[in-house]
Length: 337
Image (cartoon, one colour):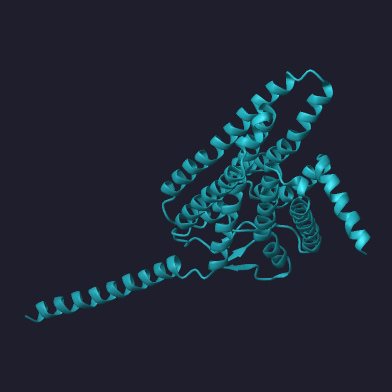
């Protein structure tokens, strides 16, 4: 009887201790999985003395982005001669470049001076969502711009009929819609992960690959969905761009005069330059192995800040209409002063 009571007592003690351990582990797991309130953005792994130099570099590039893209939008809105589908798309491209660089640059510059280099969980979600929205929208918009050039050069007599205002608005709205759907899906799936490995993001903004490295969840489904959506975004847009330019080249080569060929190619070279810089940087970044995170950051820098800085320069330097509109606007301002 006494032995039986002792066994029951020991069993109770064991059960109580086990319950406490399970409860403690559960609390720890809950803390790790659900109580992430912020992340640490490591940024560039350089000596502190170089942070000032990097801050000044980011500041200069961001100032050029603001000046170039806002300037481009003002020129397009002010000059009636630029009230065409091509410049409508270009104005939207400047808007996208301005906003997705603004999602990244200010926070990166603040972190150069901050010791903690933190970003709130909500801030990270917002940054991730907005950046994905604008970068995907830009990919679709570049395909739309290639189609616009194809119609302008291959069917010039039907250009104004085919590229109506209604169609242009629908194409831009469709680009934003595709960007929004993709961004919602990627953001919801990424932040449904359990971040229990660490809070430290080895990047200068919240990007999908560094966030995946922090997760202890099964990444198979997320990676398959990401791969599928990347394929659905990248390949159709690239195919539209390539096919459009194959037709453009074929048509331009049939133009008898050298001057005519030169003029036709000049309207496309700016767009090709923008496409090459953006897609080149994106492919370089996502094909870079995880073992080279610093190289991945440099590639990210190219399409988050360098591309939005170069786009207005590429279009303004090689575009006679934009240059004339700029001179006209500056003359008007100087006359008023």
